[in-house]
Length: 65
Image (cartoon, rainbow, N blue to C red; front, side):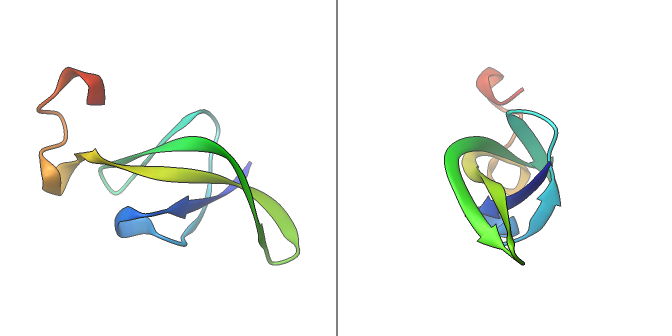
């Protein structure tokens, strides 16, 4: 399913997602109830989890795994 990333290093990137969580360049994104229109089609929006991003210590907490 086509998706849009919101926040973090992948902000505004268009990607393909297959579930409620998405890893993009070692950062975790979670699905939201929001939809965004991009190139004529609606896409799910995935929000960045700043506490689960490698540059910010991703993996140091169990809830990020």
